[in-house]
Image 1 (cartoon, helix red, strand yellow):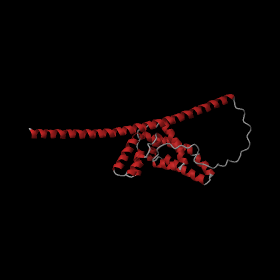
Image 2: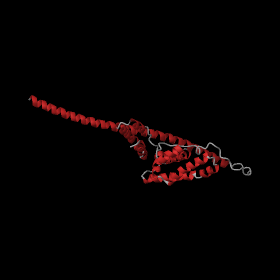
Image 3: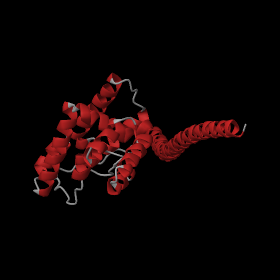
Image 4: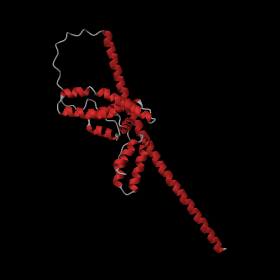
Amino acid sequence: MSFEELTDELYAQPPAGFVARRDELAREAKTGGDKDLAAQIRALRRPSTGAWYLNAAARSSPTSLRELLNLGHDLREAQSGGDFAAVRALAAKRNPLVARVVRDTAAHLATIGVTATASGLDEVRGTLAGVLADPAVAELVEQGRLDGPHTYAGFGDLTFVVPDAPAAAPEPPAPEPDPADRAREEERAAAEAALAEAATRRRAAADEVRSARELVEAVAAQLARREDELDAAERRLAEAEKEQAAAAQRVEQVTS
């Protein structure tokens, strides 16, 4: 198989078996004399949970995902052309469409026996923002070859300032905020800050889990190889012992 075909095979399967299968394919390529292909295969990274969710969704080709990819293309075109009205109109479709893609992704996973996790779907949402902003990320999603999250803090790579609408007539001064409302706002801000901190810790913990899982899988693959070598060595020993016994018997027959 070509490198493209091997890549598709690897990113189509769940992450749990990625490392073992990747190493197996790399060994086969090396044994076949293609060291460059083996090196390319070994360089492929195990996909994160959210990345695999989107890879699986891309292979089912839901309408919502195709619409999101088209929306990203149209937004970038409108941006590059300075069509501010089109950017505003298209941007209004972003959040509802992202929500549809997330729902369709979870539904597809359920049909193949996978229950989507909240953290995995959070990663999907973040990556979908990257799809709208970056054509390279959009291409990876379309091909089903994501290996990790691709988040984006703003909307697209908008470097210009969209002109404001004409100024409206001055409004009367807002009344002084109620102390109870101010307290609720402060409480809400504190809760949001705690939520953001918890999300950061969760992402760090998820990275640690992913690294540990990759290490375990690598050790398991190495152990499997060593067990195969042990079995082969034991078979050779048994054969050698049989040959030695037969030779000893012949010697005894000749000398008796």
